[in-house]
Structures are given as structure tokens and as C-alpha cells.
Amino acid sequence: MSDQAFQLLAIVIYLLAMIIIGWFAYRRTKSLNDYMLGGRDLGPAVTALSAGAADMSGWLLMGLPGAIYATGLVEAWIAIGLTVGAWLNWYFVAPRLRVYTQISKDSITIPSFLDNRLRDNTKLIRIAAGIVILVFFTFYVSSGMVSGGKFFQSSFGFDYHTGLILVSVVTVGYTLFGGFLAVSYTDFLQGLIMFLALILVPIVGIFFTGGIGETVDTITAMKPEHFNLFASTATVAGVISSVAWGLGYFGQPHIIVRFMAIKSVKETKQARRIGIGWMILSLIGATLTALIGYAYFQQNGLTLDDPETVFIVMGQILFHPFIAGIMLAAILAAIMSTISSQLIVTSSALIEDMYRALFKKEASDKHYVTAGRIAVLIVAIVAAILGWNPENSILDLVGFAWAGFGAAFGPTILLALYWKKLTNIGALVGMVAGAVVAFVWGQSETLSGMLYEIVPGFIINLILTVIISLLTYKHNAEIEKEFDDTLELLKSDKEK
Image (cartoon, rainbow, N blue to C red; front, side, top):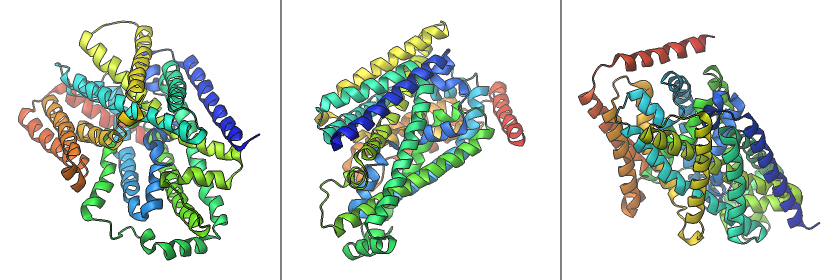
């Protein structure tokens, strides 16, 4: 059996595992709450790893190692910012969001929570938030499908469109039938695969480069600044922009929806430890893969044409072809976990926050679950069409969409959870302003070159929301009771 056949076998086994998990989740999905939120019954490990896998995408295995391989540890500031942001998100948002969304009319999406929390009779917040999610995530899903097509094209020589269709069909299949449970369970397995791959490559690789001392000496001799977080290429604005990626966590619907689905508040602490532990070790693994890969290529007089392939190439050098195939499956897992998470959130926005809000249609759970599955299919088809021509794809929108979501939803979510005086008008104006500022700033090469667009977008949203809420605040007994009930329930859950 050829090397490529072994690698392809590993990929086939991985894809079959995803389909089997999807079928298992389908058998457990009975209601709309099950389909959109897994019945709020996820354990801490599944919650933590599914959130991590949905978050990281191919950036963890290709983008970050490639940047560090080419430039050095100065590129690690984004990873530092993301780690801090993720921890703050787990600590400050997860417990309150889990309780508050259930108390506030059992909200199952972020837009419906904001609508219910603020008693927005106009439904404008819900619809505007739903539109933001629908538009950005359709392009986000498209970029993931493009990554899948290019993955099969570069790894196995497949036609780009064949690879795109294969990734799309499998991911859409288990998402469409199994809903949130399928997405969470597959993300859990994908998170494990990614973690093991990122740990194994540097552990084995260090033996090939002669140990830690020899590896450090090789890198230092070739590029003395490679280990310097404050290398000459680092600027104050650049470091701030990189660290500011962490602000985006508070407003990422496909990540914070996991907090709403965990079984209990008490389990958020354990989930936080698992999730942050997974994240730190995975980021360290990605960083070490880049550094050890750089040392290996220098020692052996080899050239790596594309730094972003360092993880793939090292896996093929260090391991048996079947194990190397599992390394490839880790990249595919990163791509597919993000696509599926975004698909289910987009489906939720389309059905729960637009179809239901606009038409106020009362129907059975079966009707809405079916509508949700149709929504997944429609979004996936549109995303595939957008990504059909790789030259026209919007891969740059990944960073832009992260900033857009963070600027639009981040301050709004934090204030909704921690400030009684937030009003529907303040939230709506701030959310729209944050999204617009991030969009305009991101489209300007001059402005975005100076500072990442999430920073001004987040600040403008926060300032406008607070000022307008103070001007329009009126006492509402129902809102204040829900706020107080949330605090009481949080307190009692922690004491158990």
C-alpha cells in the first residue's frame, strides 16, 4: 500500500466516524431545544473541547505555526491575546449566560436572549442580530469550504471542487440531521484529534533535531530574534492589535452558545479548566511544531516553500503514513468543526430569530426542527456557491468577521449580563454602530494597518450603548426581577 493510500485510509475512517456520530445524535434529537441547544445537557468536557474546536479552525494547525516558522515568537501575541480572552469569557460570561438565558424565557439563541432580556417589543434587536449572524456566517462557512477544497487538492491531488463537495456533504450531513448534539460531539472528537496531533509532532520532532539545546542553538544561529516576543518588527500598535483578538470572544455566537448548553452552572468551572488547559497546550504545541520544524529544515539543508504547511510536512517526515494521515485528519477536523458550528448557529438565526420573529408562526417542534434542517441546507448551498471559485472566495473575511462579531455583540453581551440599566435602544444603536465601525475601519488599508478594527468598533459600541441607555432607561420590574433572580440562582448553584 502506498503512503498516500495509508493517509487516505485514515481520512476515510475519520469521515465515517463523523457520519456515525451524526446518526447517533439524530436518534437523540426530539425537540427544537435539542436541535438548537442539545437540550442544555452537555457535560463539561464536551462543552470545553467543542468550544475550543469550533474556535480554532485551521489557524491553529496551519496559520499560527506558519507565522511563527517564518517570523518567530513575535507572532505569538495573537495566541496570548486569545488565551487571555478565552479565559475571561469562560469566567465572566459562561456562568451568567447559562443561567440568564434559561431564566429569560428559556432563550436558545443569542438574538432571542437579547430580545427577551430587554423586552424589545419591536423585535428590531432580534432581527438585526439575526441578519448580522446570517450574512457574516454564510461567508465564514464559505471560507471553511474553500479550505476543505484546497486541503484535498494539496494533500491528495483531488480536483478542488471534488474536495469542496466532499467536505461540504459530510459536514452538512451530520449537522443537518444531528443538529447541535452532532456538532458538539463531533467537535469533541475533533478537538481531541487536534490536541493529540499538536502534542505528538513536537515531542517526536525534538529527537530528530538533537534535543532541546541543539534545537535552540540551531534557531539562534540562523535567526537570533526568533525567540524574541519584542523583536524589531513588533510595534506598540501591532502588539495591541494582536492581543485585541481576545476581545472578540465575548461576541462570537458559535462559541458562547456552548455556554448556554452546558448541563449546569457548577460545571462551567470544570469546563473552563478543561477548555483553557486544552487551549494552552494546543497553542504551545503549535508554537513548538513551528520552532522544531524550522530547526529540522535548517539542520538538513531543506527549504519549505510554504511555511503554513510545516505541520503537515513534519507529520509526514516523522510518522508512518497512516499516522501522518491522522495528522492530516486533524487539519480537516479543525476546518469541519468550525463549519458545522457556524452552520447550526446560522440555522438558529434564520429560523428562531427571523422566521419565527417576523411571522410569529406557532407550530410544533417537529415543524421547526424540519425548518432548521432546511435552513442548514440552504445556507450550505449558498456558501458552496460563493466558494466555488477559489479566486473569488473571501478568506480574508475570517479575521474581519471575528472583529465584526466581537464589535457588534461583545459589549452588548457583557452589559446585558452585568448592567441592569441596559435598554433596547441603547443595545440596538451600539450593536449596529460597532458593526459599522468595524466594517468601515476594516475596509481601509490605512486604518486597519494602524490598528485592528475590533478595537475602535468595541469601544464605540460600549460608549454609545452606555450613553443612550442612561438617556432612555425606565424602570421595568420584570427586567429587574430576572436580573436579580439570575444572581440568586448563580449564588445558590455555586454553594451547592
